[in-house]
Length: 547
Picture 1 (cartoon, rainbow, N blue to C red):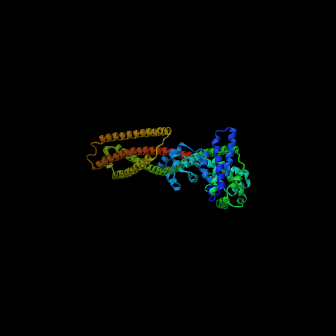
Picture 2 (tube, rainbow, N blue to C red; picture 1 turned 90 degrees about the horizontal axis):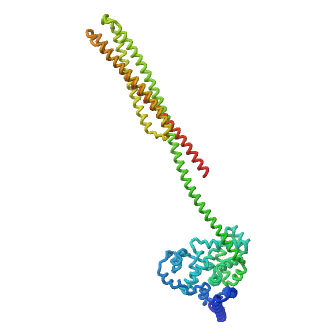
Picture 3 (cartoon, helix red, strand yellow; picture 1 turned 90 degrees about the vertical axis):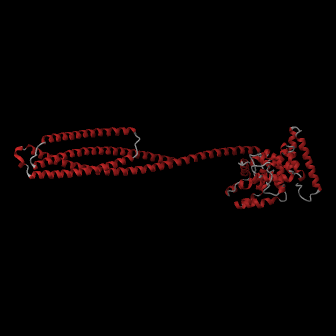
């Protein structure tokens, strides 16, 4: 009974006016009746609304249905228009009114609300349309539908899909097989009350019933539309069904919505079951939210574990590099130690040979001293003098070689000390204490040997002084005697230098003992580093297994 059609007959106008007058009278007396009478009045009012509200009275009836007349917020409308909304840019894309976005900042602005506001502005002035829209948002579940989360829209989709599964199972199975979800065709029905999909007279008639009965009519009409097109939809694929919903179904109701409204009230709608479905949906969403929180937590833990694994892998690679480097250094040091030991053995052999020659020279000197002085200079032949000179030359050569070898050994020892100082320190205090005790014992042994050597040197010096005192004044008359005395003096000097060389050799051995001790310490460090590396690798494998 749309009053917007041109050429409407006066009879229809008077009939619509009569029905609307009856509706206004019923609404005014509704609150003054008993409960039983209120039920009868409400049934009569719903029947009148289902027949259609005349266009000229629609503004008044809508305000009465939602109790939007004389609202205090109506006086604030002019002030709200002067204010700036946070959703100004979004609103300017669709409409210029932003008053509601200032009243309800949680909802702000939703694009679907523009269609409902446009329909209201077609029927009434701005202030009255604002009041009606405010009531619709607060009392007709539209506020929950238009929230940014759109949780209420998800609930409506779940309820509508359950009704479809129960009442049209074949069509439901076909939709599932084609992955044709309910939100692909029904979301705009709930957000705009059919205003974006169907002709305006059809949508206006549905909106009349929506003002009286709420979202129930959307469920009924939606299911009735599917029921009327079930045969065609089952024959189509997903793309064909989309085309059918967009182009075919809207033009089926150009003649009028009476047929679909009658079919809508043949649809089974159980309010208790809808409440039950609402509880089920809330439970499902709560569980999904908990699962999302758990998944987010697991993802965070997974990311932290991956970072930890990466760190451990880097540490393991670093330890492996250090271990390899340590093994290489250890091999080099072992080779150097072997070379040093060979050189020490050579030096020891040379020292022994020099000592044997010195002993031979001592024997010769003693034999010369034991010979009687009376025999004169004839006893000292040229051969003995030449022999002593050759021995002296050989002793000097060996002394020079010993000095060169000692210098090379000292340079190598300094180089090894520098390398040892660059190696990392051990953190194991107990093992360091044991190694320190071993070093102290070796140091005590070396110091004892050094003291003995120094005592031998002092004894040689005393012997030398006594020799000088005994031989003072001898051989003044003979040049050969003077030459022999010089040879003996040089021989004694060689013995003293030999003693000094032995002292240096002892010191070199002591340094070698220290180097061997440090080598043992570093070997222990490398062994512990290998153990730590194996432990870290086992931890990395364990973490990778748990991952």
